[in-house]
Length: 191
Image (cartoon, rainbow, N blue to C red; front, side, top):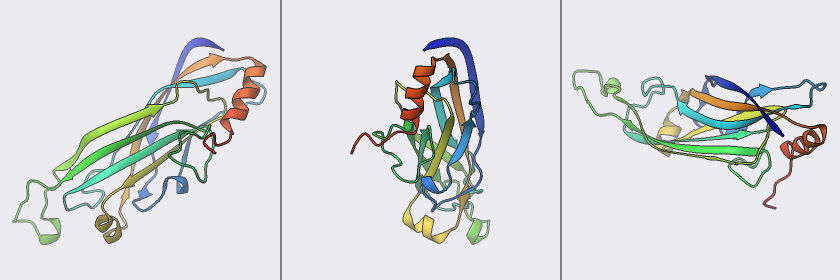
């Protein structure tokens, strides 16, 4: 495996996601490289970030609450096993806590829009990445925002997230390609 000193950046926005959706229901394929004649190309994720793009008002959150954004980067589609670092397909995950604040109350507004929409504030962020991983075919992003039960049940709110993934390119041998492809489609190591 040899670095080529070339990089690639994947950036975009997820489609609208409903608050109650689980990660495996709406994963987003952000890279799909299917050139079967070129098995010598691979990438390693240097860094990735995901953050809520939607504003407080766009999410229709009128009360103070805490939101937790969970996200995961995989080398294949997954129906189960999300947030399980023991799965070979999982190469990175992160969690971000947000404080949705209704400060700045304005009594002159109607009851349903009494809050000024002061904002969504980042409180804490953690990102975990497997050091030893190679992406050769596919990169899939799963996203889920979790909020207080009362907020989730009272609304069918939607949200969107931005993502930014920085990749570095590698040249690999055919033997390495076989090993990485098996691992990328791999098994759960924790069972």
